[in-house]
Length: 153
Image (cartoon, rainbow, N blue to C red; front, top):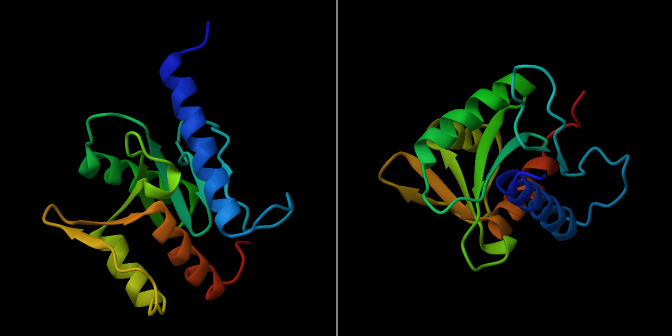
């Protein structure tokens, strides 16, 4: 018997990957830019989705807990050796393009310091110390950041 919550999470992770790969025109399996679900190995979680240089923690729940999720994404980014961890929270009744992508203040400052984001969508700040894009806006940020970095080793 399949766990319904796990199945819902898997569908959401797959939808995120499909949206980002489609929006950014990534399809070749050997392309380092391909956004893909992470295989979970060992005790140290490495995030749900690998999207160099971002780890994406996917959440499909009604009640948001963004600060706790961001701490989780930070830990998982560190475990995976990625510079940034973000959370992709499904927006009820909307497609993946309108999902909310949250990034904490520390990672946002690091992103701004390390990359020229002029022309990128400006994230909405939250008084609790994080910023939010839609997944469609994040796709453009990802495109710009990836144009400024070398492929992962």
